[in-house]
Structure formats: C-alpha cells, structure tokens
Amino acid sequence: MKYEPVIGMEVHVELSTKSKVFCGCSTNFHAPANSNVCPVCLGMPGVLPVINKRAVEMSVMVGLALNCTISRWSKMDRKNYFYPDLAKNYQISQYDLPLCHDGFIDIKANGTSKRIGITRAHLEEDTARNTHTIGGGDSGVDFNRCGVTLLEIVTEPDIRGAEEAFAYLTELKQLLRYLDVSDCNMEEGSLRAEANISIRPTGTESFGTKTEVKNVASFSGIQKAIEFEIARQAKLIDEGGKVVQETRGWDADRGITFSQRAKESAHDYRYFPDPDLVPIVVDEAWEGRIRESLPELPQARRARFESGYGLSAYDAGVLTAEKEMADYYEAVVKQGCAPKQAANWLSVELQALLTEHKQELTASKVTADRLAAMLKLIEDGTISGKIAKEVLLDMFESGKEPKAIVEEKNLVQISDTSAIESAAREVIAANPGPVAEFRSGKEKTFGFLVGQLMKATKGKANPQMANEVLRKVLKETE
Ligand SMILES: [Zn+2]
Image (tube, rainbow, N blue to C red):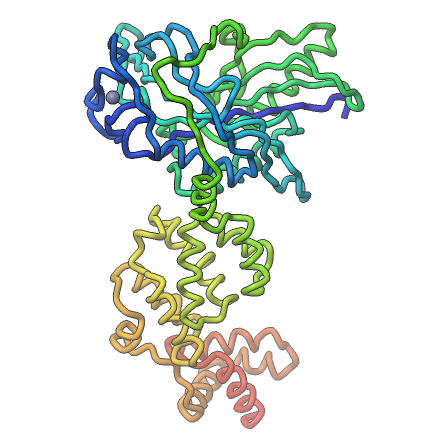
C-alpha cells in the first residue's frame, strides 16, 4: 500500500436520561413536535439551567467502561454559534476540561486485536431538529430534541482503515448497550458517528490534511464512506492536487462523499465557561459507587462464556453480541441444559425464527424457561432433535409449554425396538430396488432407507435406534 489511512472517530450518543440535561422536559422521542419544551431549552432570556445528575453518572459509567480517567473537577462551556436549531445561539458543551479523558478500547479487526485510544468523552446538549419538506418550500424546527443529554466520544487518530472503524463502532455500541445508557438507535439519531480521515505515505509519521465525513446513517455506510474517501484523497494527491480541510457529506445512493462546508477551528467558537452552571465535582467516593454499579462488560462476558461454558470464540461472540441474548442464554444454561446444545438451539434455530418473523428475542413466546424445558425433553430421549424443531415452531407461534405440545401432538419418540423393527420390515418390503442397490454395495442408499423409516414413523423413531435396527433387519432378511 502506497498510502496509510489515519482515522479518528467522533461519536455523539444520546444518553437515555428521562429528562433533558439542563431542564425537566421529557426526552420521549415519539412525542408530538415542540411538545417537550420549556423556557430553558427554548433559550428564553433570564432562565437558569440546572445539570441533570443522572446525566453525569451515565457519562462517568461510559468513561469508566472506556478505561478513562474521570476528572475530579470539570466545567461546562459555551460553544458560540448561530443555527436555527439552537435558539440561544450557543451550545452548552465542555471545552478544555472534559468529564472523561485518556482511555482506550480494545477492538478485533482483520483477525487481530488492537487498542484504540479514547481522547475524551464530554457532556453536552443536543440541538433541535430541522425538517424540510421534500421539494422545498417549508422548513420547521422541532425543539423536542433540544437539550437532550449528549455524550461526545472522541478517539485518538489510531484507526487505520474502514474495517477498523467499523469494528470500533460495533464494539462501542455493544458497550453502550450493555451499560444501558442509550438505545443507540441510528435511525432515530441517538447514535451519530463522524470520521476524520487523512492519508500519508506509508512509513512516514506526519499527518496529512484531514476531511470530516458526517451524516452517515449506518455503520456499513461509514465503512463505505471511509473507503471512498481514502481512494479519493489518494487519487487527488497522485494527480498533484491537495486535500482541503472540510466537512463532507455522504451520498449513500451514489456511493460518494461531497463537500459541504469549510471546517471551523476551535477558536471560531469563542468558548468560555458557562457562568450559569456550577462546576462538576466527581469525588473518589462517587466515582467508586458508580464503578461498583457497572454491569459485567461485553469483553469480560465473552471470555467467561468461552472458559465457563466451553464455547468457541465464535459462539461466545454471537451469544454476547446483545445483552438480552446473553442473559437469555445464561437463564437456559442455569436450568442444567448442556451449554453447547443450548447455544445451538438459541443462536441457530430460535434466531432463524426471530429473523424470519422480525421479532425481538425479549418479545418471543419462547421464553428461556420454555426453551430449557424443550432441551430437557431432547436430553432425556423423549423427543428427537428433528421433532424438537416442530415443537419449537409450535412454541414460537402458540406460546404453549413444550411438554403440552408433545402430548397433544403425540410426538413422543419411539424407542421401542419392536415397533421400529416392524416399521423397518415394511420399508424393506416396499423398496425392493433401493434394498438391492444397498446389498450390491451402494452404502449411500442406506441413508435413503433410513429416511423412509423416519417417514414411516412420522419422524418419531429414535434416530440412533432407527439406524441400528434397520441395519440389523437388512442383514437378517438378506
Ligand atoms: Zn426544557
């Protein structure tokens, strides 16, 4: 590779505090436009903001999970700019003293582990939302979002390609979901990611001029936008041109980035400490209480699933991707089910049904208790794995207990040798052609005959016994 990409990420995440960060207004996303507003978040003169304690706690939780140092003393600053979506003409943010700083997160990309430095995570308020009618004409501003708690997480320029950027975002989102501090819904804008991208000749140290790509609606979109931007900058430099520092948008339909505006520098914002807010003091005791309240984090849980349940790295990764899935899995295993079997039924069979019906695991009628009860029916030989698929589908649709389904549909596995033997004799009599083929040495035909035997017993024959008995009867009748 002629050039090496150098990428830093900025992620804005809306924290799920019940009320906004500086006033008591609700943060409900689905409320009618401009219904969650008050003089504070509308920027009326003379009002006084008061910081939301829970917003500080949630930010510290994220900071600790990202291995950051938590500032004992920090403050809020005014970032001055005019936009129609910010009525008071400044955003309350943090400038030189962020609440959390100097952390890291470990990611896995291209098959190796890599540490990405976290420069800072600071608290600020979200802006209102501008809406424009398609075709022009009308524009509106919805202030419901104005003042919603926002945490901005900034990385060091440690990311070296689109795949690493994708891995970082995936890992970060997983962490935030485990901490239960945000729903991270990109469609509703509760997680927004921007990438600062530059390239430099491979082997050199100094940074090239960077562009900032924003307003991308998905992680895969960001990955594509970065790939495009790296190629665009390389071509520009190869042709003797210069990269201009600017903000670029992403056109998902055309698959290109495009220039939006020249990038402002920090000094353009005339930051100064907000005189209406007291400093934020997080003493050791408070930080300690927050640290103790942290749940088990994804990486620790993945490692525990591998060592504790003997799962492969892949299975552990799939099962811990979402906290709900990991909790569900552990609820099943705690009832004494074999870990590997539980992993397969959850991440393959049940997951397929959930995907097909676009259903969330937590909303499924197949509760952890029911899945565990079904797995026990397989383990004790009451039903075969094949029949269990039928039971699972029934449970998924009806929400009935697996035992009731098995009794109702008469699905109990046939483990009675004489019943299987008589079915085997019928199959042999009805299939003289395949039987002759098998006897002439075509072992493959045996599979077909087993299939016929399973069909004759409506899938209820114990599969292992079906194999053994069929072989025995074939020999006896030769
Ligand atoms: Zn308000």
